[in-house]
Image 1: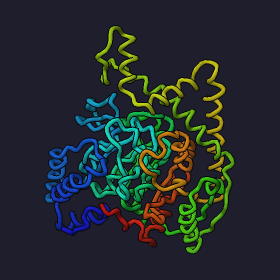
Image 2: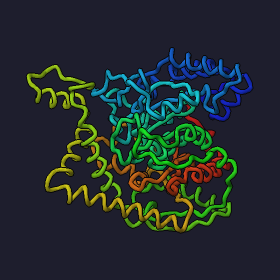
Image 3: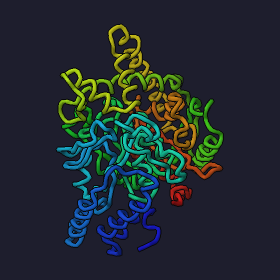
Image 4: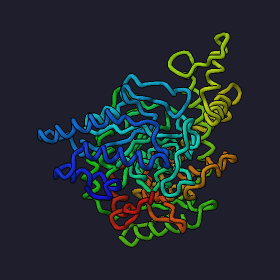
Length: 488
């Protein structure tokens, strides 16, 4: 077995399994060993069902021996953000509120992964209830960046990105409400995708902001992400926001589509606040596309400067509503210091929720309150429409947009905790895609002078994931960024 097993792509691991050079049990055990070796430093995992993972791997080996392979994910371990339901496994959302909760059912994404033969490999740490940009808001631990263990992995899907980056698992699932897949992918030097809203079922995803949340994959390569998206995409009658639309063959699209494309560069993404080294690296990627014959065109997104404010009104309003169900009465943390029903409700929520979650619930309740609904929430929804129209106008001229994923590289743990606005601005380039409901892909496009990853973001038309993957794959195949790994 190769020394670099932990950093092999999904495609490479499939080849090893198909040739018989390695079994799924051997692969799973190797990753368990890797997790035990590096996770005390990285802290990406909340839990790992070792016995269950090995049993699923053994079943995959038996299917392979019988010639009954389920597909490209059969026998491949995959990690899940601890906000996606897995039957009979913990579902904590990295919160004391759900610390002892065990899910009674599978999310649709989980069920599809099981159907594809994937080995479910542990629950991954996150910002509590997906509220944060650094995975410092977890009630249990901070997840650190494998490239520099003094720095954050990003958030809220920091555990999902860091586990792939550290070589503990080849692929993982996260959720993206305002950049929570793409930003940690950028910080950790891996590939991450937020699909179009409605492309992947949200059934079994614990809701933060229901009109913004979307499940998506992390991987070492664009092709890895395409394979996982293929498995989880599609209409689901259990999710009323799931769209009835055919799912393309993403892997075939990646292999066959070579461009050239018309690519837009939104000038608002390259202004004040963008780190010069990030700007330089992303500009080199844009220049590379131009050299390949792509038509590069500057476009304008005039309402982009309103995206962060709009997001934090809509997202917190929806969070205030969604998190009302965590009340200490049914399946959540229940305070022991209670004398009456009001105590039960107030004290259970006060003890169970962390500071950032409380802050967002309070803000969301405020913008929905009588006298303020029209001034804030209704106005934010109108601005959201304008932001979507900006994208749709741009897509009349171009096939996709090229931008930085984040205005800066990973920052040191604790650095932005005293300045919430600075923390929120780390998602300034990703939030607008969630407001518009469009797909976004982040992939590595270089390292800065300190050796920290920089991410290129590609934003596409609604349900244009196949094009995004093809555009990203063309760049990836011509560069060596995906073959660079942290030295843990």
